[in-house]
Image (tube, rainbow, N blue to C red; front, side):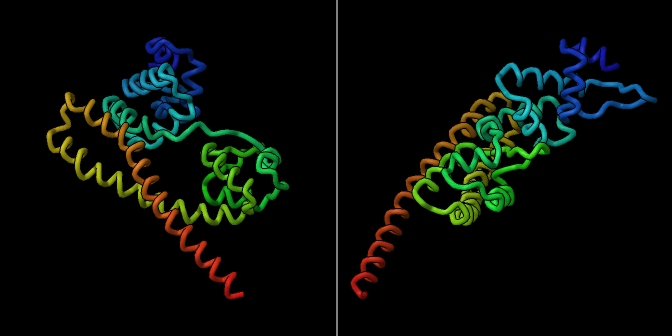
Length: 239
């Protein structure tokens, strides 16, 4: 079917079909001369996009979800993929400028700090020079640390180390789920009647893991602060 027929079949405008295609939300059509022809896989993908938009997903979130799915995934697989990833989707990015970012931190604009943020994967530079903050919540936490008097460069260096440890912790929890709940689900033939159970487990895993990690962090932080304070006081006495 042509793009006009595809749009009519799904109930969207041709303009939207082309816009979704430009963002990579639809696979390329089969070209015959200068005319593109679409098939059932395009109908399924377009219906999925329309459904996700109706559920409140932004185009950027849909793009990230579909980008991580297998390119040959069926509509059923895509639906399962979307459901499993929904609780883990990253927050909506925030667009700002280097000057605005520096003003929020209460420090002079420092291009080298922005470059470090980009290298760390926390910020992307857009074609127009503006900055896309990929995790605004993490940025806000960082700004609060800067307000305590910690230089941005020192904070970024520390965050790079923290990210490595957090990534390993995340892998540990995800692998635990894959080796247990998911393995049992697959071994049973992925029965549809157990899908709600799997989705509930995935949804709860993140907050439960975060609570466990925060509790452990508080305990370790208290121990490290005590050791550091004792060492600092001992040094003062020696002087």
